[in-house]
Length: 67
Image (tube, rainbow, N blue to C red; front, side, top):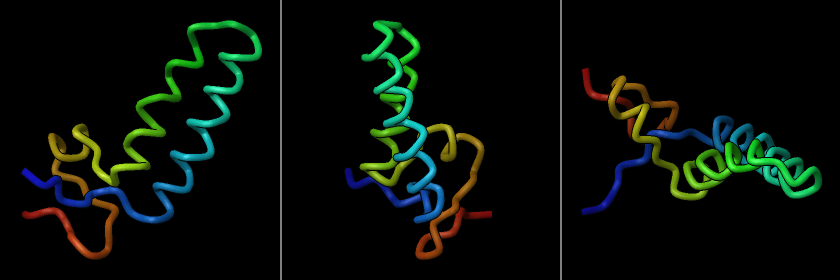
């Protein structure tokens, strides 16, 4: 099963940036808060967000959410 893109380019850039910052913060301060960056990095990498699917949202220009 192939996941359909529902995360657009701007959304991916924001997710990459915030996700990596959280991971670095968690590593640097040895805090569990860094783990919050992991889902952001993964959704940016795969271009698919399960929460967006549940809420029928798409920020991807190529594959708009079905209405």
